[in-house]
Image 1 (tube, rainbow, N blue to C red):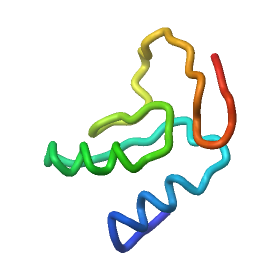
Image 2 (cartoon, helix red, strand yellow):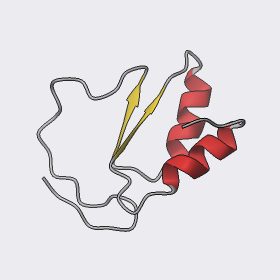
Image 3 (tube, rainbow, N blue to C red):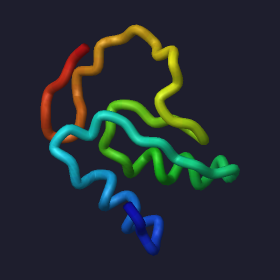
Image 4 (cartoon, one colour):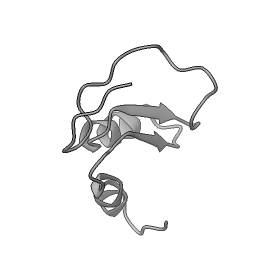
Length: 69
């Protein structure tokens, strides 16, 4: 998926009925905080995606759907 602006990237990422997770790749901590604040997801990775170990926790809200694991 491609995008031209950061705003478009967030819009595309939020265009999901599930919003399970997102990955933000940046070396700018302020940009990471801004992007993370606007993402409607249950989990955000910074400069990686889907590491092999995840914290064992229940996720109760993801986008517009209830979800738990």
